[in-house]
Length: 171
Image (cartoon, rainbow, N blue to C red; front, side, top):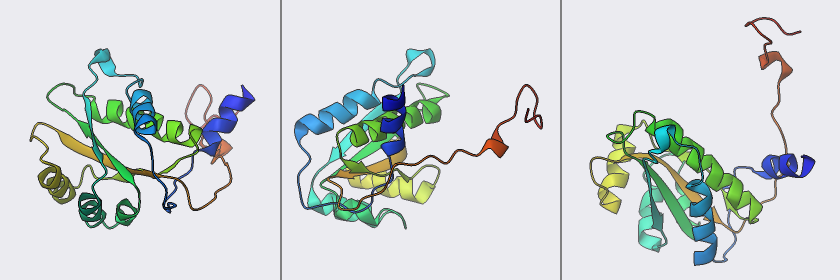
């Protein structure tokens, strides 16, 4: 069990990338992990856009105040959800995104979750740039690359946030 926990704790938000490629096989592995996520009623309301084109990545970098790293990442995976397919599209696509991030850590890749939803203006910009149909919402951008920064594994465990049987009971 400690190997699994070590691997989970290794997942960190990496925003600086080396000038090295991410292979098609690595991208497919990330997407396979994402699509292994749980989904309410097994609807799987997600879709993904893989962006490698430098001009598009540069444009994505300007979409949101926190998306600047998209320009330097060799690939950006855009996570979409279809609210017409499921009321739980946010939860399902969030689980898929976390699986993708964990898989990136397992492949020794760096990645970070850049939230787009619920910012309508950012969603509209991504939708227009990538020709995304209106029925899809843009949950997030996930820039991925070989890490050019090192962060130690960690947890953010806080015992004060754990309640037993009833809220307020810490014993």
